[in-house]
Length: 337
Image (cartoon, rainbow, N blue to C red; front, top):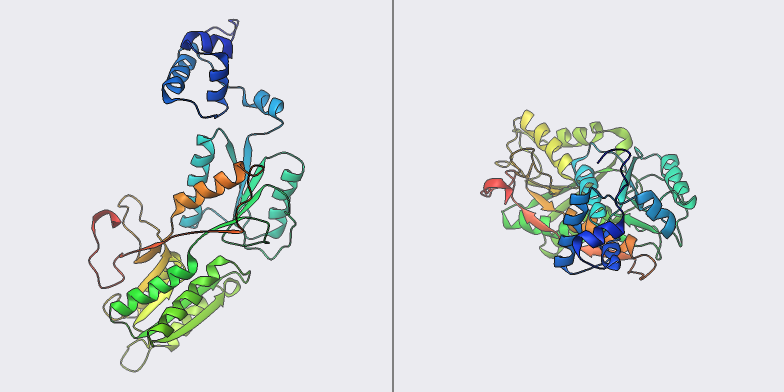
């Protein structure tokens, strides 16, 4: 079509597809229609070169069809995969994603919330760990992994149950001197429940358990010093089973121990949390409690886009499962299955 040619309209698409104009409108506004009609309309639009003017559509509906997503960074593989799933989930519903990485900075988070107040975005999905205080009461805001208030919905995996699952798996594999390691923000969130679940399961089985939590401000050195001090005479670690709060931490602990001649999983078995996979092979980076990242993203998107129709419970808790990944004494199946 030349630049001077008349651009096709929704009426043209309706005529080409042999359907009513209202059907075309429903398809492009993500209103459910029969699959046969949807296929006809989309095929007709492609033939005519028709595309939706999302800006004009937004003006008519008083929406931007844009959702801001706040994440600490994109270096952490869990955050990166979550961003990808959120982007896909929003795109399937006709929305764009505006990604903001805050590096745990409260001011950066506040700037994103100002965008919502100024109607520059239709809502926010936020995974935040800063100590900043911000008011999102009554605003279309969905939190991930952090309950901000009883009226702000939060989506998370079953962190407490995952902690119990990790302890029970290590105990079943013969471990009797268990350790929980966490390094992270001082901000209280759902992820803190991982250690609580781990300790509860150890108590139920009358197994010794040590919980060690480190702030991320000191980096990894304090944690490494603790591990070095836990090496007994003869080079044996004082613990034979370790649950790390994240896969990233589990990987770093595994590397540290192996460099000191302590075998993983021969001498100590390690389980992480998240379900992080290795590039290309799709195998898990360690034995892990797998978070349902796709379901977390889908739930957050559904809650946000149905904000004015329903009010979900303050916490939506999704199930996790265990997967072996080479840092426990189990066979690792191909492809990390």
